Length: 136
View 1 (tube, rainbow, N blue to C red):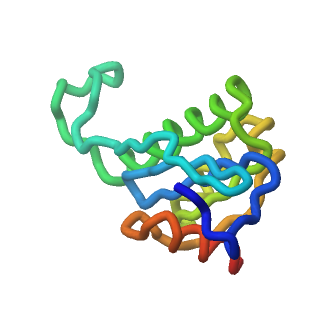
View 2 (view 1 turned 90 degrees about the horizontal axis):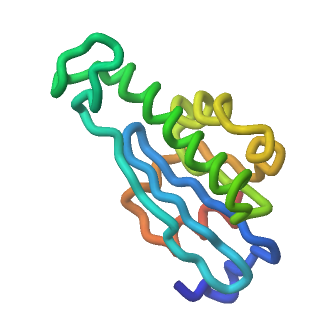
């Protein structure tokens, strides 16, 4: 997507993480463009029996959120540490997601943390997300 001129605030590549409690979208913004990198969600069913649970057994929302924040932090850390996709990291997520997510970030990702907004923007489009980020 071409970023509207008034919202072009990314002289260096920036990874933007938008998340709610079980869904996330990762965006890469640089100069005048913003592209979706990937999106994912944490399923309600356990994916393995490595903790003694039966396959397909539902996990609690608390455990699901914990796993979600770990998976999200691991993926963001990998993108920044291993793939070097960004020089800044911005987070738009509810505080109860953002705090555990930040705790699990690799140092390389934690050190480039930029803006953090306590919002749920998962139903908003790219322009609305950028407007919130630039206004912060």
